[in-house]
Length: 365
Ligand SMILES: *[C@@H]1O[C@H](CO)[C@@H](O)[C@H](O)[C@H]1NC(C)=O
Image (cartoon, rainbow, N blue to C red):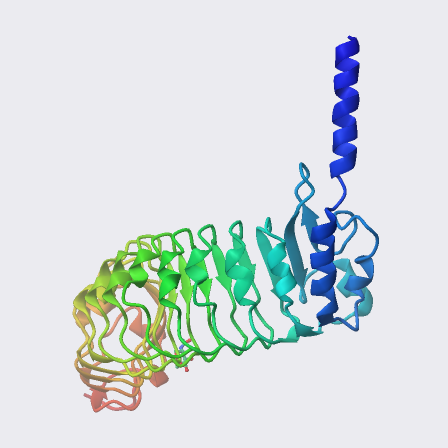
């Protein structure tokens, strides 16, 4: 009995001691705070006192050792702090490298503050526990840290909607737990790493609106879980690897507004898992493969502004569903098939071809 009481007392004492933020974590947070200015909401006004684990807006600690685990600061959220002021977040300043001494950090979200500038501190790659790095929607410049691949636990890398330049570091393919990669709407140049397929856990790869060149690595076809691939609005050339046609869960494929050439791989349009496909504004040539079936189900199939020739395959009318079809601005010729899905499409889906005829075009065959 006595022993139990003493034991309990010791445990309580211990818990009492560690439920306060370690001074080194607190100092790191205060240095991070001093690099930033958030004039409208006053979120950093809560960052006072000795215990950073209690009531510091956006800071969460590990309950067992009180080390800082998460920093979650979103400039656009449902949080009541935003309701009060009736505006979304705005913050200037830079991300202090002092963050890097928070060596137990698993989540760093500093998203949608619109005006945070400066680089991603390169020491961030020493945060070996980091799982989520989300800096979307700021004005961050500079490059992706060269040794980003050291973040072996990273599952989410979202730095979209910033001003990041330079190339994709080759080490990125070592992020073998990465599930969500979003680099869209930056100024990233260079080529995609040819061994991008090593990212075997990846389900979303959004790289649209950059300056990426070179061709689409065929190794992407080996990413079993990839459901969403967006490379649109880049300078990508070469042909579409046929491997993309045999990806088991690929459902959205946006390659529009690039310089992609060659023929459409036969396997691609027969992949019945594909649901949204935009290949518009490229230089695709050759024929539309006659591979559609009753399992074909496209919400969007946009092949406009290419150099496709020949006829619209009859098999397309056996499709289960086609919501939005755009074959305009190609070199197609011949009779537009009748029956579903063609009966609900408008003329604009077929205009500016060489010699298409029949409904819904005015031109009689
Ligand atoms: C496909 O991409 C083009 C060019 O980027 C864009 O203009 C068009 O709206 C997209 N189509 C659909 C259906 O979203």
